[in-house]
Structures are given as C-alpha cells and as structure tokens.
Image 1 (cartoon, rainbow, N blue to C red):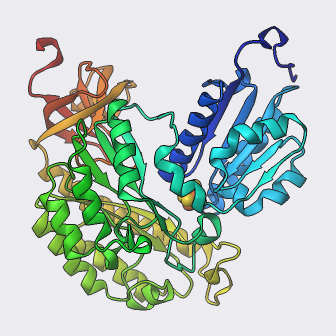
Image 2: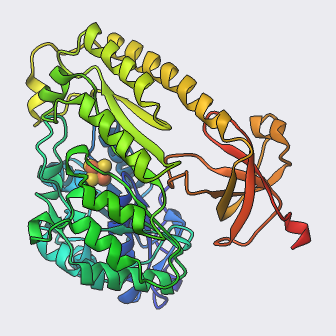
Length: 469
Ligand code: SF4
C-alpha cells in the first residue's frame, strides 16, 4: 500500500534517492545531480522508500540495458508514495522522454543528457505540477562539468573523471551520438581543477572515462590531447594511480603511448574495445579492417608497458558473420593472448544501420558463438592468471566482504571475513577483486602477493599481515 510522505518531516530537508544505471560516464552525471541537489539543501538518502524524490538515471545501450532501465522506472513508479517525485534522467530519457512521460503517468520530470545540472530547477517545476521535459543540448553542461559540485558515490579513494562527452565514430550498432551528441572534450584546465578537488576529497586513483579516450582533445584542436592531459595530471598531489579506459585502436598514437610510459601515475592497464577480428566484419562495423595492425599495436603497447594488463571487448553474431568470420575471431584470441575479454551477442538496436541489415544471425547461433568464445578466452585468461601466482602487487583497499562457506575463495586460504581491493591489474566494476585476509582501512595501499585465483577474482596474502601493523 502506498504511504504518504511523512508530514512531520515537512520542515526537515527533503531527501533524494538516486539509482544510477549504465556506465561510469553516467555515474559521473549521477554524482553531478546529487552535488547540485546537496547544494540546494537536499539530503541524499540510500533508501528509496524514505525519499521525497526518486531519480532513475537510465541507460539505453542495448535491449537488455533498456529493459533494466524500464523495469527500474516501473518498480519505483509502483512503489511511489503520495507527494513523492519520480524523475527519469539519462540516456533512455534523452531517447524516449516524450513516450516515457506519456506511458508512465507516475513520472514527474524527464532529464535528458544535457540537463543534469538543472536538476534543482527541474525539481521545482515538478513540484509545480508541470511534468517538465528537458532535452537540452549537452555542450553547455560539458563546459561546466569541472566546476560543478559532485557527490562522489564510489568509495572515495577511486573517482571517475569524464574527459569528454559524446562520440565522433559512427558505429552502425550503437546510437551514442543520438544519446550524447558528437565528441566534445573538456579543457585540460577544467580536468586538472576537478582532479585536484577529487584528490582533496580523498581520491587516490583517477579513472579517466570517455566514449573514446584516445580521441580526447581533437575537437578543441589539442594535438595528442590525451598525452598532454596525462602530463598535466602528473602534478596533481595525492593521486597515485591514473587508469585510462576506452582507448580506440586507430587513435592511440605513439605520443599517447610515450606519455603513458613516461608517467609515474598511469598504471600499465590498457582497455581497448576491438569488437571483431575479421576484416569483413570490421568493415561492416565501420572499424579499421586490419586485425594484423591490432596485433602490432598490442605488441607495441606490451613493449612500452611491460607487464601491461590488456582488456578488450568483442561482439559475436554481427549481421553477416559467417562461421569462417567467427573462427577468425577465435584464432585472433589465441594470437592476441589478451588478459581479460568481455563478449556481447549483437543486439538489434532500433535506429541503427545494422538493425535493418540483411543476413541477421539467428539467436541460437549467437548464443552458441558467445559460449564458445567465452570458453576459449577463459582458458587463455586462466593460463595467464596462473603465471601471476607469486606476483608482488599493491592493493588499493575498497572494503571487506563476508565469504560464504561454499565460496571457491575459501579454498584459497581466505577466512569468512576478507579485505577486498584492486591491484593495478583490475579496473573497478569490470575485472573482479583481490581478496586478502584481515581488515584494512578503505583507501590504504597494502603490499601483497597473489596466491591464487577463481574465474573472476584473485586471492592475495599481505606481505605484512594486518595484525602485525
Ligand atoms: S553512455 Fe551508453 S552505456 Fe553509458 S548510460 Fe548511456 S547508453 Fe548506457
């Protein structure tokens, strides 16, 4: 049964709850909305049931992401209390705002990808019963990003830094320009200012995110922009690790690789979505059709960053992918020896060119190829992980976890309660965690060595156990 908002709390600050879906770039936008609301007198709550306003920051990447966003909106709409506001923001809002507002009467406001900082004003419009729809251009937002307050929702020692918004590529399977516009880079000055503020707030690891990080700066006429940015961030006190996500194979220049190698803070971690490894499919994806060049690039990155962890993603079942194309992808995996790989089955996205392409691949074939590709890579990743047993690593502590008696990690010498963190080899949210016995403060770096691994996580032993510190 829907309960009315507690009237006795009327004079107390209003409370906002935010559910952030999708990628790390969207999380930054969520944190900006929370920062703007906190500055406007709102309290942030972790309980939707306790909130005067529930904000769902949505994703519209592929069908499962859209379904998750829609289900989340419907869940909060069903639980909505009298007087509570339901605000839908982000990529799904940008794409389907008018339809969502019409179909779900509980929605009080729509906040597109250019309107995040306007959230306090939008709340007032919602209070006035206007059911506002804000689908503004996002350029003005990107320009203000470094100067807007943010409530960092990660564990403070790690913070994301969004270096640009939108994308200049025309992938026929993703509608990102329709959601976030063409590439728009932030200035180095604004990024350094934000990095300093994040470091002051406790960040020790900065994770640089963009749709294509290696393309950073091109639209603002910065030559080798990412290299210049790496150099500028080198001087930010308090930051020990800088991790760069989403490099694009053809925009990684020698200057960028040299800057990564020269930096004392950039970790040897390469995240480069390659998407396929057969020229025909790469061409159909509007990507450089030269898998041999990809292998050369991987070799040069390994040369420049010895012991680099390399992560990629691939799509199987893209329209017209034959068994021969797919086998070429499996063969590439064997040759590339990537540390970690994410696989996706191609999903038809309304409004993209590939959606209407002939020769769509049956779902059961996509599923079979997905399973097979994962099996091949699991064997490769396992073998690489085995070589790392005994390796000395620094672990940035994120917290602690209770392990179930059945957990495979218990067989690696871990007790019921373990500290968890990540080494330079693990990016937050995608690469699993490192578990080690004992308890350590969040944000501390602990020297350890790796003692074993499961499919997703690693177990380590501290060089100086917690009890002895
Ligand atoms: S940018 Fe892409 S992945 Fe990120 S929230 Fe939007 S649709 Fe999802």
